[in-house]
Length: 308
Image (cartoon, rainbow, N blue to C red; front, top):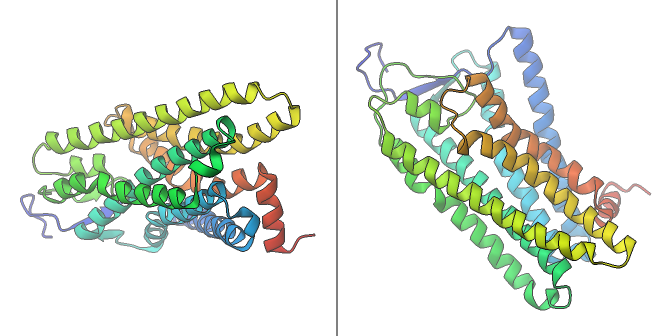
C-alpha cells in the first residue's frame, strides 16, 4: 500500500489496546494467562470425558465437543492479539483479516447452535426421561453435532465473500483487536449497505431465534422440574441446568448488545470490551462453570488430576 488516498488497501493495522509499554506488557501477560488456562481447562474437560466411560453419554459428549469449540473460538482471536502486543507494526494482510472474520463469526454461530442442542438434550432428559435413551441416541447426538459445525460455517460464508469483494482505500487503521464487520465497513471506499443489511439481518435472526428456542426449552424444563416431588431431584436438575443457563446468559447477553442493538455509534473501547466478553471471557469461564456445578464432572476431573 502506498500513501495515496486513492490507493487500494492490502494490509490493515489492528490498533488493539493502546497504552504505554508497561500496560501492553501487563495486558500481554493477562491474556496469555487467560488463553493458557482456557486451553488447559477445556482440554481437561475433553480428556476427562474421553477417559471416564461413565461420561460417554450425550450430555457429556456435547460438553466435550463444546469445550473443543471454545478452544477453537478463543484461538481465532487471542494468539493474533498477543502477537500485536509485541509487534511494532501490528499489521495483518487483507486475506488474513477476512479469514479471521470468517472463522470468528462461524465459530460464534456454531456455539449458538451448540447451546440449542444442549438445551434440547436437557429438555429430553428431564421432561421426557423414559423416552430419552431412545430419542437422544449417540448416533443422533453425533448427527446434531455435525450439523452444528456444518451450518455454523455455512451461515456467514456469503457475508465473508461480500466483505472481501469491497474496495478499501484511504486509512487502513482498524481501531479493534480483531477484524470485525463494523470497523471494516467503515474503511470501505463506498457505502456497503447491502453487505451490512445481509450481515446484521442474519446475525439478528440467528441470535434471536436460537435464544428464543433455548428460553422456550428451559421454560418447559422449569415447569417439569417444579413438579418433581423429590427435593434432591430438583436440586440435581437445577444444578445440571444452572451451569448451562449461566453460559447462555453470558454469551447471548454480549451478542445481543453487539450485533442486535445498534453499535455503529458506540465508542471503539466499548465494542472491544463487548467482543472480549463473549469471545474470551465465556471460553475462559466455561471449565469453571461446568466443573464447579456438576458432581459427575468434578469426580471425573479429580480422576484426571489424581486428586483423592
